[in-house]
Amino acid sequence: MKKVLYLLIILLLSVTNALSQSKRIGRFPFELRKGPHTVRVIFYTRAFDSSKHRVGYVASIGNTVDGRKAYGAESIPEAEIASIAFFLDGRRINIPRGLYSDCYDPNLRGNRLTLRFTPDYSTIFVSMWGSDGAGGYNVVWKLRANGRHTRFFNAP
Image (cartoon, rainbow, N blue to C red; front, top):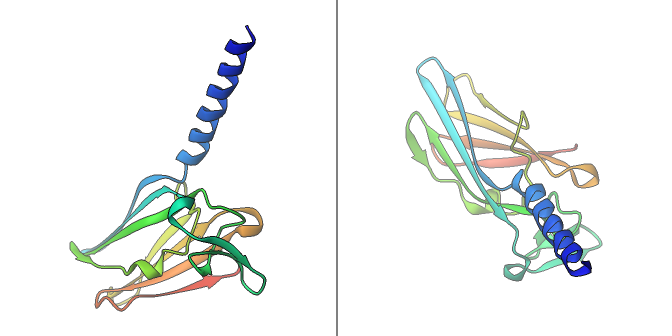
């Protein structure tokens, strides 16, 4: 009887852990249409695998992953952005990994991400909230048709 109860508890804990991660892991498409213009941004996220990264802490910047500040990581992150696909008027434009590889535990469900065109439709602002609590952050990517993208962080 104790073995059955023990196995049931282990099974319940593993299902609970899987469900808690599922809200941050997957494929998250976002689209905005304005007149003849369309922007589509797709975030692909995966579970964070600490065996593939160097996780640490530096007093002057806080938690780090692979030697860089780890936005959203209060300890070991649950999820990381694997890639971002960006399409402007049907044309795919590359986004360098360095613009998102340090943004952990993204909040992509619900209304946590916004897209906005500039008046000339050559630039899209993508604003995303990540993590929660003390590790919360807001990142804004400025994605350009010419591929010269930038980003900045706002205080939560």
